[in-house]
Length: 281
Figure 1 (cartoon, rainbow, N blue to C red):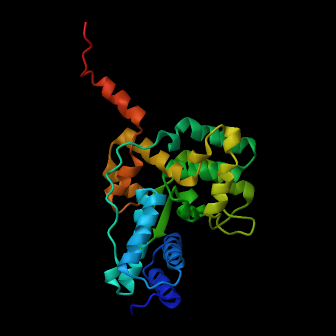
Figure 2 (figure 1 turned 45 degrees about the vertical axis):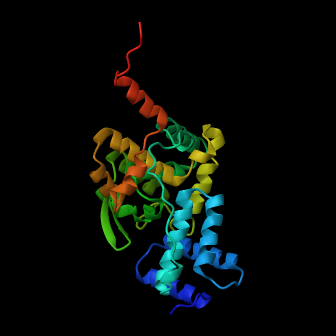
Figure 3 (figure 1 turned 120 degrees about the vertical axis):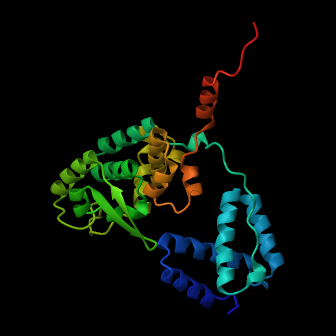
């Protein structure tokens, strides 16, 4: 198998499903591969052409985004045994500081909650608190079911792994009240009118609609940023990155480090507290 065709792409998709990759990851891989195939415009795919595509991506996107696409392509090239087409990722120095303009603060989070409450969007109000209070992924919200609320812990089954998510007592109290009001007797807590788990796009769109009322930049408002806020808050109190990695479900601590990066202003204040500069008299 070494031809790049729609059939092999479909076969690769089925292979990823069998490998128990999550649906979002699979969609991302196939989207990246399809975009590359479309870009080639029917030309013979060679290492030189792949390098040209890499160069084009580098001019238009951030290094992390480029590497993400290259990983998708390399995985596919491995699958079809076209090892000659694989290209190296860009070398990126580990980021020391996060961008403060994209970092959601606790005060901004609280304003978002207040805005959701004022708009009488109880479901979104509780979804945001559930993500932020537990560090759970949006794709894992479906595992927060009635039984989880009653026991205070949710069992997440994803990518062939099982981990327990602890639900704080205060959160359980809010969810129990919500369940009773909505007459939910079993299954996921956060569902649509048709009884299906609320999807990522719906949550993302609803959160964006809170921005103006809450006075928070839209660049900061998306579900995954609530997970980041949980991680930073937990780490600032516990300083235990290994435990945090377990809670977040990360297989690599290097991934967790990204969540705990401080912004430049915080680091500057910490350096000033060191008192290692003496002003001249």
